[in-house]
Amino acid sequence: MARRPSTATGDRAASRRVGALRALAPFVRPYRRLVAGALAALTLTASVSLILPIAVRRVVDSFNAGGRLLDQYFLAALGIAALLAVGTGLRYYLVTRLGERVVADIRTAVFARVVGMSPGFFERVMTGEIISRITTDTTLILSVIGSSVSIALRNLLILAGGMVLLLLTSAKLTGLVLLIVPAVIVPIVVLGRRLRTLGRENQDWIAQSSGAASEVLLSAQTVQAFTHEDRSRADFARITETAFDSARRRIGTRAMMTVIVIFLVFAGVVGVLWVGARDVRSGAMSVGELVQFVIYAVMVAGSVGALSEIWGELQRAAGATERLSELLAAEDPVQDPPAPRPLPRPARGEVRFENVVFRYPTRADVSALDGVDLQIRAGETVALVGPSGAGKTTVIQLIQRFYDPQAGRVTLDGIDLRDMARADFRQAMALVPQDPAIFAASARDNIRFGRPGATDAEVEAAARAADAHDFLTALPQGYDSWVGERGVMLSGGQKQRIAIARAILRDAPVLLLDEATSALDAESERAVQQAVDRLAEGRTTVVVAHRLATVKKADRIVVFDRGRIVAQGTHDALVAEGGLYARLARLQFAGAAAE
Image: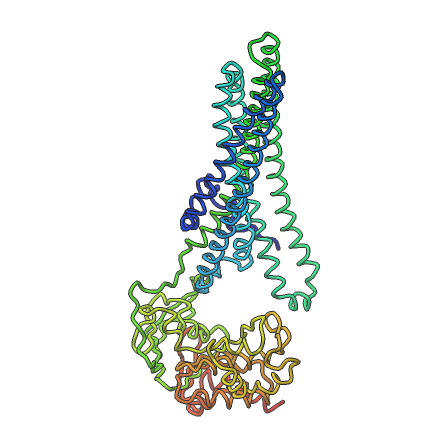
């Protein structure tokens, strides 16, 4: 079902004025020389444009003069045109280069900011919407920096200089021109506010469209399996149509503003021309002066018309800048301390939970962990078991400090995770999640993700230990075979084994296994379990598992239920004790025996 984006205009304060573009200043400031060069070229072209009508007047008034003087005026006009061409080309090069450079920096800054955000941030913002901001919104800003701002400044200079030269040419006719100005400004101001609102709303719906498409395409197989293609098409079409309607209203408003402004401006020019023609007939001014005045009037009118159009572009870019600024200014709920403590090296890997209470931001009324006290000794293998939603995976996430607990603390080697830099202590951890992330790269690169500096021999050794070597060498290009987006060319078990090889290659003192063998067949599970057992030797290993057969050899099994630890001990002791673990074991092992 189509959802209105939370940032849509109807749900939040209206977009700020064009002044929001000031947020781009930090990205433009490093390129002062480029800006200065562009401004110099812009000033040159505007000045030359203002000189050209004077040359035209000289030519017109010199028709009855000698041929040599007329030739000189024509040559001067040609030289001015050449200078204008060179200046325009230089301005285009410098301004466009500046725009591309600034937008590249903005994209890099936004991505760098977002990629380090904790999972709590992505619970509020859809990935597709972020991608839309990085692409669509930055394209709008590129248009403004690389074109609109330059054109706007040039037209402002022509407008200011043209008005001065109009006054010098004929004060009487200039006074008539100025009478038109208030009539032109009113629609620009009134309709401009409407454009600002519609521009922001249109961008919000475009982002929503990207988010919806990303969500469906990333789950294409599930959508097809449940035959939801038509519903997904209808939902996407509805969102896209809403975005189009918003764009249509924006385009209509801008077109109306353009029509009104251009008509008023040129109607005024025609009226002034009529008065000027009468002055020429009476001898109050020469034909050349009238031609000069008309050219300046057309230039001024064209500048006003161009500025009215550019104003709409600037307002759209202001909305885009606001959206990008929101990402750059977004506060991560999980932050590194100002003066982080270093994790002692080598890390021993002792993990401790001290009366930890945690609730997910989107489920603040339910405790995922409720007063958990747990010590995992260095080198110990601890298995976390219990029903779905009992809090097992939450323990893994808190160990990596993807979230902070509302009460209590989590420590590594006696140091609170909140007192260390996340990039520091995460170096001491290796993770194998239930749904491993496989990147659109080669199998070798996916394994090397665990330790980018690893050699090919080390990558292959890790693959052998994870029981992945045989199927990898059977691929068309072996380890260098492309595995597709999200590993679509691999089976679930193959993806899991690549993830295990990645963790083996990382060689970290703390190993986190979240349903690491859940996607493997019995034979592969046995081989991988042996590899995991070897890998766990001398390391702190935390295993989350539903299949109890995989954790029977753990040093200690911790049983969770509704966010609390209800029992812990060895497999045999827990079975003998009865309770939840014994019931789960009876159900699973009895079912396995029946099979």
